[in-house]
Image (cartoon, rainbow, N blue to C red):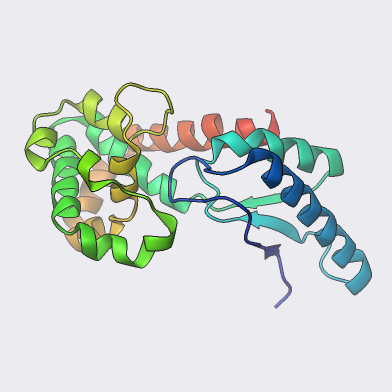
Length: 214
């Protein structure tokens, strides 16, 4: 099977669904070096021309997107960015924005996530940093409006409501939604327009535009 991407380990932390934590100058140096190493390997060892650098977990790493954009533009290279988890979060945001039973289901997902925190976080211990003392209680969240829930979960650094701990917990809690089966998927279908808009805005506005200077 021809290799399509190579995903090296970079300096700093690439926690699930939140921004990069680390030295930007060091990352810039490593990223450019890796792009050039792959370019050399393609020519030297006959690897596929489309071989590209892959960044895991690359979604929501807004502070390093300008660096990545500059390097891939400089050398005319492709890039693979893993974003599946952030799309799952947009589904939950879309449910919350829809209100009514959508908001109630989003709150139910949080309640189950909160009560199963240790179980859900254990497989991702190396790629999350959650301060349990900064997680809102289930009772508090149950009193939130659609806007409050969405703003707390949506990744907009600097927003007064944004809570990276809340976001990371929901990020690793997709198992909770999967266990709900049709209770979850039927509402995805019912509110497909709202959820689709959230997903599109996230991928295009926050990711593609920043990465490729669209």
